[in-house]
Length: 364
Image (cartoon, rainbow, N blue to C red; front, side, top):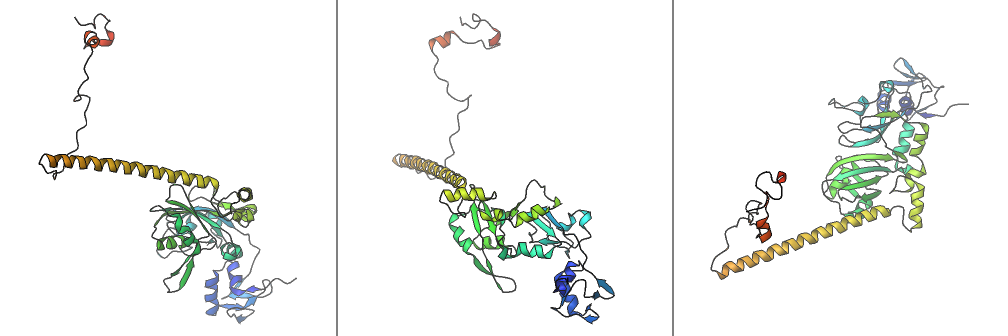
C-alpha cells in the first residue's frame, strides 16, 4: 500500500529539518532535490518512495514519537525558538530530554502574559487547535487598570476592525466576557488567536491590561503547576482538548451537568451563572450603600459650614480664613464628670490600691 502524498515543505517540517516557511525558502533557492531534479514550490512527494535531498544529505521521514508538552508559562519569557536580542524563551524551561526535537508553540502568549501553553512537534495537531473552524475555546483571566462596565460586553463580542502595522485590517472579537464581583477582573473567552488580541481590543475601549493568564484550552485546564513547570501530556489529556465537554458551556469549566442545570432554569449557556449573578448583585448593593453614606456625610458637613458662616455674618465677621479642625479630647485633657458623695468617701488609694484592704482605701 502506497503512502499518502504530502507537500514537500510539510515533509521537510515533519522530518524536523526546518519549519515550513524555511522549507519554502530552501525550495525557492533550489537547494532541495526530489529524485535527482530540482524541486519546485507546491510539489508533492510520497514518503518512502521519492528520494529527497538537501545538498548531499538524504532526508527520510522516520516513525517519530509525537510530543505534546504542557507548560505554565511565567511572565518575562518569549514564545519563540530563537530571539535575536538573546532574551529568555520558553524553550529554556523545557527538560533536556526534549531538546533534540524540533518543537514549537501552539498559539503564543506575549512576554507579559502567563499561563497554559502547549508545545509540540506535531504540525497537524497544532493547526487543529489553532484554527477557528475547530471552535476550541481558550479562557483567560484578565485584570484591568479600572472597573469594567458590563454595558461594553455586547460591543466586545460584536468586535472591532483594527488596522495593523502593515496597514491591513484585522477583525478582533471576544466569544464571551464574564465580570468578576470586584469589577476590575474579567474572564475572557476566545476561539481565535490573533497577536495580542485581548490587549489591543481592550485598549480601543480605554482599558489597560495589568495581568493576563490563560488557564484553559478546550477541555484541558491548568491545575497545580508552578510557573515554569513543564510536563508531557498523555493521550487522554490530548483528547480532552477536543472534547465537547470543554466547549459546551462558555461560563463553566466543569462541563455538561452545569449546562443542563442552566437549561432547566431557562438560562442560556452563555449567560452568567446564578452564583455569579448573586455575587455581582451583592457587590452593587454594597457600592450603593457606601455611596448613600458618603452623600449623607457630605450633606451634614455642608449644613454645618452654612450654619457657621451665617453665625459669623450675624456677628459681623467674615469666615474667609481656613479654620483648623477641633482637637480631640484625650483622657488627660477631658473634663471629668462630677463625683457622687459615695465616690468621694470611698476612693482607691493612690499607691498599690490592689494590695490594700477596704479600710485603707477609705478616706478620713
